[in-house]
Image (tube, rainbow, N blue to C red):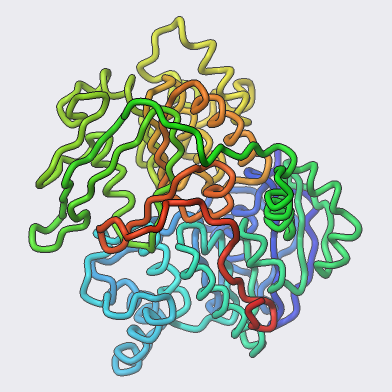
Length: 488
């Protein structure tokens, strides 16, 4: 079955094409083809005709691509060397490279990071680094696959403002794949909407596509630009948008499932990443862990499930040190979802991944969970976890974390790459698990998820828990740049 079918468009110089579609619809495949990696580097059969500036994409030199997984395109040990790598391959003069590298890093909020090791960056910082490497040579065509997925809200807004500036200058043509539609739709000159089979739903100016195809896109699970606004309006009226059940901010939590006391940890002893953190999460609690990229969220999440040992302080998971539990005992108590799904895959098929370590009596429940997460056994069971789309990999990682019905769910960016149907399905499952007494800590930049799924917020800033008036869930998004650069 083809990943894409009958896709036809023409993008004039300086225009922005926004590509939207459900998870697994072929958006990333289209990005790879435009960048010339299909079929040159990625085995595939390409029919039809695709040109960039009148050339075969594989020979076009003026194209920059940001992959959905930023770690897959980082190649050098140090941050500055990684940005310089692309410039060197384009035969830039060393003096010009020396001037351009810090400028590109500053554009994505990594000024001062030149000498840092790329592997020590957070997921969001790695995404910023990948963006800097692509922006540095100022390519004429930018192909961006979920470029803001791991960025904090201020970083996403700043990056989209940079794209707004480029659009205004009309010196860069852009193909943008983005689930943060409130940021992306105002930027687009054209929208290409594709369905789950890779077929075109509609293409044209944004207003026309919405007018003609809103219902079809909504049925397909595509996020629409006013979905977030409708959620906020519904919340102000005391209700919720269809398919979303808000948690009670005033529900009394049960006994503590996990506690941390004076927790401290650093990858380098002289530079702690988590600093003197004390917290408790009770049964039924829904806690959002927020903060800027690099603030220590993923590190704290790993400490709470025993994947890291603290340098000082203590963690207790249902009364025990999670770092001292056997893997089997830990898996029964805590489900952990990595920020990068591929890091937790161990099996060669999706079905074996979900069933890994489960007694046969639980296989039926595992397959039912796969169905609910839109990974039906007949279609996905025999597939390799590494051949799934980014959104499908995230749903598989969630299935692996949820399948044992653990007392604690620690989820690192659980909504990454999710279309609307995947998002709403996840909310439904989490509501059931939490109503039954599980506790959740979700490290997230998704403010919609914070409002829809969480009842308390913990904010980290440089490893410290930031002072907060009451830990309340925010009621509105931050400011978002419009197509003309204004902030509404």
